[in-house]
Image 1 (cartoon, helix red, strand yellow):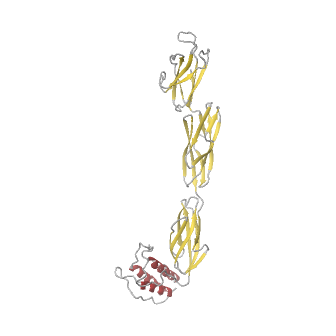
Image 2: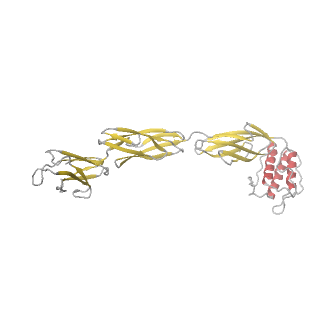
Image 3: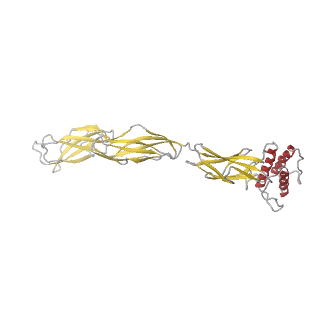
Length: 403
């Protein structure tokens, strides 16, 4: 008996018997039993296959060949054969012959396959070649995980020794990151794995537009507090939208695809407010609006009504913006306010807020060569002074006088 070997399959062949044990001519042969296994003496044993005899009376020198499939690739197997007659009588075991089970297909290239650098949203492709290495018909399929996919050549059927088929792998990154996966080729109960790699990149900046209060490049208002709104988009998604005023101040807008930046304090004259959209890869896009604060200042709830209008954070923020405006117009820096970001419904209005408004406005009067204002309640005291409508109405009047 002779064998040849490789992973997954094993070809065995033997010479057919012609006589019985008593040397009489063999006339009733029906089958052969092929025993196989890793042990040195697989026959008799539990692992065997029955192979029919082409004739009950084999001629001298007839060779029988049989392929064992579904074996473990690379494992050494020993094979032994017996002859079985019509009555079920079985001959003695042949001398075992050994070989390593071989694969009946191959996949090239054998090393890792790089699909290179690809922009998120795009794709690139590479191919593997599957070949029949043992003859007959090899039928199988391939699989791979995202962001890779198989776009052609799967499943595959290889008829005859040397037959080939290409399997195309596509890399479609969804994020700017390195990706690695196994492409698994499976046929006749055997699997060959090949590594694929790809580098997802993102160099495309977001798009950004200011749509409110205007889509134009310039805007004029008498309100010291500005609210901007707009849209942004990106191939991987915008992660943050921020704003900055060249006359001081900055912050983060709420939302990304549709965003709003509120409470932007303006100073008298031109304010260039720049909005920046950023994606996960650090790409940015900017849009600017030149906002001129001019004319008569307007305030919310003007005038405030005593014992009727509740004092709110917006009243303080508007006065801060107006006072910073008249300060900058007289070459003073914006004031360093306590609780610079008053949050409606969260930050209480305190006596120190009113005291700072008066101090900051007095500096502007002095810079203008004027006598600072005098107030009905001259000294707000923390924990004692109740902030009244009169306090804020007076500040509004005095800041308008300096506009």
